[in-house]
Length: 422
Image (cartoon, rainbow, N blue to C red; front, side, top):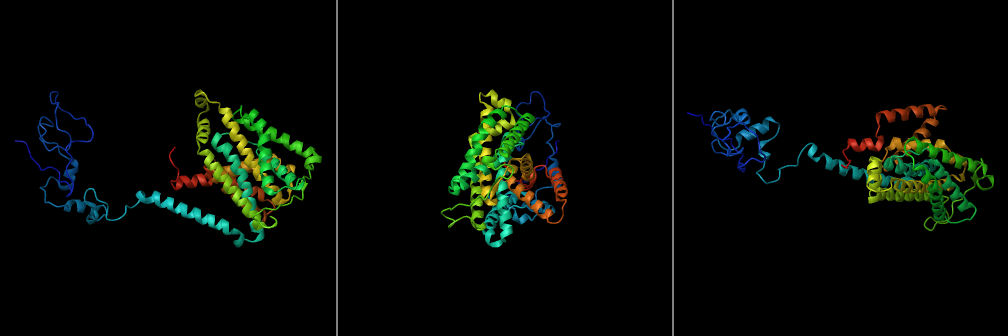
């Protein structure tokens, strides 16, 4: 006579599921084509020697003892796991208290990130009243070079191209802004616009020739054109001043800054607003359909070309836009320091901008700005203590590249689980 045992006890408020959610394979006879699914309470004949299947889970809980009613065993199991059975609610109702652990971690981290972001914005706005004159000057320079690194990140992070001559457009913007302010005595908004337009205009033919190549060939072409522009600026003394450059670049009047931008506080706010607008513009660009297409080129250029689109055209547009932002940074630098020289176009500055992007995080937009801050602050601190600061600076950045391969912002985003899929 077959043995009989009670069915597993459901929790109070729950009803047993009649049919199984998925189809499971089981050993049965060939003519047994209408066996009940898992969870059914009917007898299962001709399965496991005409006996009901033993549930190992149920046997582990109560060993097949008869039902005592209630949810005492469920509460005991939850108590053994460190939870209180009284807080288990009925089916379809909310929990008596919020979920613990990783369920809430993502939301908490996001809210903390937003609060931290607003705190940083508040500190940046209050910086002119919190910092000394020299510290405010360093902070202004940080944002200018952060804009240069941001423009390079558009090329590196979203097209996959590495430019070794990006500083040439920074120097072109500095020369254009200096000539606009010094020679034609135009207001500084026009000087900033002239720097961006001049750099973008010269970058168009250079990019047209360079973006047809990939990898090391593109990098060497950008370096060659940058050195060519550096040589022209060095030799054309009547326009650029030669090795001495253009000095005495003024800060012209601006309607919201009073009579002039000569005060560090007014010029700091000009730089801060310009960098913020440029950052928002780059953020909107990379999340537009055009930006998605550029990312697709970076992932697989051959597949993108197979769709009938020209990858070089998209890369050329990004190259010109990035050069325009670099020229804008140069136009901000010239009146800030009061000069423009060929050294601003040299390959050394291109290498420093490349290091800023790597340290901050490639393809993160905010990362290059953070990388520029870290790069310049490390230089300022170490140079005040030792004459051999370049050795220590190089060692620090080598360690950062080894242990933070995604950069500061990229590593922080992965650690805080803030990256969105796709």
